Length: 374
Image (cartoon, rainbow, N blue to C red; front, top):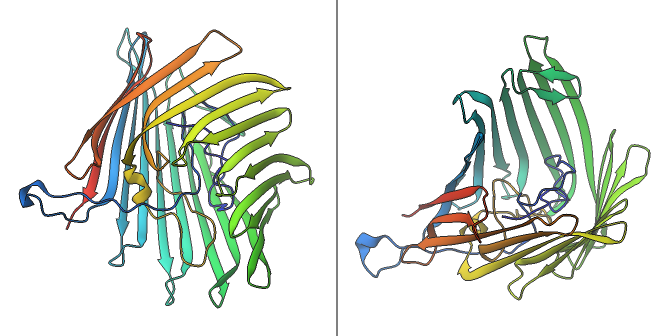
């Protein structure tokens, strides 16, 4: 699993991403979709085209406090194989190891719904997100307007796309958020965004998203994003991401923080090097097998829209991640994980197990994969 999903899906502006850094959260980039074939065993050698339908990830740790994370993804397509809807469900439970009592449980459900016009252009995308926190005497949830033992936040983000002929020209984005907790009166807020695409002749030059909280400017070269600049409400630059000639992020800058990314020959993320004030703070290294990653079968590009829309993917890259090593230069901590896969007859994963190596303790991860086969 990889890091920094937040700015690396920069130009969709479908979801707001947190500005934190974690060594084992997911990374999303622009990739060309891969067609994945699998076969039904009862049909012998005859091959049947199967497509990725979802997966279930279970992560567990044991100790004085045990923790269990479960992530389930589901996708559905229309008869033309276009993405119709997608759902990701994440449940995190913390249990007291001595008393077996629940410390906290969080449940996050994210639904993506797509509609298309008569020309097969994406007309509307609705993202509904529900976050529920159940706490205890040992755990509470902090939000901008208070601290809660029980907390719920529901949001609905609606993006409506407008075209002139086949060219996307703008998108109106409305975000409605409702917050409620500990029997307090609910609080509802609404945010409006406008995204405008600029062309030079028929060549896309930029996409600018503006709102009361700031702006995002994505610049394009040869049809691919080349740079993304984030600004706050006062016009100050908060971050800049540069992209290479393949449209993959190569450098991220935010204040005194700098992050550089490199890729292998198959354009899998190879290294992420973090720097602060000119000093290395961490290095994350990844290795992959030579088999296709089935999650690249999830549609990311839509007719008429130049940027990818990332939905429920939990991994990225052309191939399957088999090694993950984090070196922290500010402490002696080094974390290393390896992943083993069980493959079906077509060479796509049926299940995988990720464990820490070298006798180190850490979270163990088990994943099962699902496919739709005619």
